[in-house]
Length: 109
Length: 271
Image 1 (cartoon, one colour):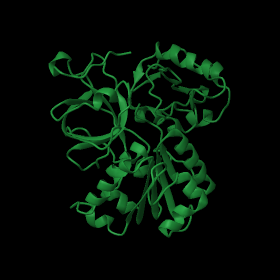
Image 2 (tube, rainbow over the protein chains, first blue to last red):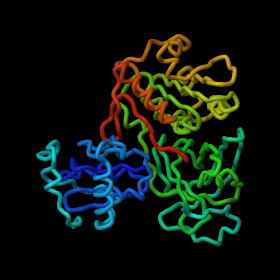
Image 3 (cartoon, each protein chain N blue to C red):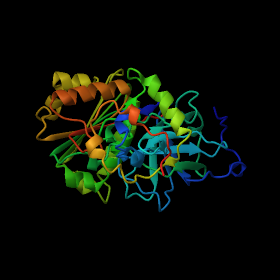
């Protein structure tokens, strides 16, 4: 069991989730953060913290796609364990749907 | 899966990075399934009352960690935990055998949603718990901040059998003599415990007692309403979901640390 970050995070990266994760299982890309599914302990503390509801349990429809995506980038991007600046234009992107085509594969700088 | 054995030679495994190594000071077994333990507390281990930490044992190169609510308040110089014993549970199988002097590992990031800051101001705070879900509330009812924020606190605790209520009953008895919060709790902390299997003066699932209204009748308070009441929930998944639905039917809304509202839930469990 794990939680997953979905495309709602893209271009926002509010990162309230980072602050509360007890096992530091978040990894940061240029414009999204992901959860390492093998490290997440399913404690659910991060889920309600996300201002754009990008974090979901792995029981939602289509979860497997997001589990795979989270795992793929968690293995490529650096770990993040402290909240830092969100994306500058987060408010503009906050509630836009279907942001997946905008995902940058680059790790956070 | 890690191979975990009860620690016999503490020097066998080095203390991993990023954890506090605390020493067990006291262990008390309540039933075949429940026990409480207390440990030392490092000065730099800061937490908010109601939060949980990840606990492990120094018994493997990569220890198994599980989420445990800190049952002691944040001003206490020791830490207290209340645990179940899960047969073949990767951690509790070994944890239940700990003795004073043994080492407990605690990861350095306390967290959790059952904190006073996650609730908007109100008059009455309800704490709904089943089983070891009483632990975060054992912390919060001993924190003076809870009484600064709320005029009245009602703790409910439901277990299958009477002996499983003992930890909470002792807690309520002892809090009256607590030099720091004893006076604050006078007439303001109420405790309502029920059993679901064994015969007891108060019986039933808390959700059924809320739906039937018996809980409010027994306590002589009005049914929950948004103007007065705030809630915190900690228990089994089924209990969480059902209690959440009931609170929402009373008009309350779930909050989080970054967006305080009228009730909060803890979903992290011991396994």
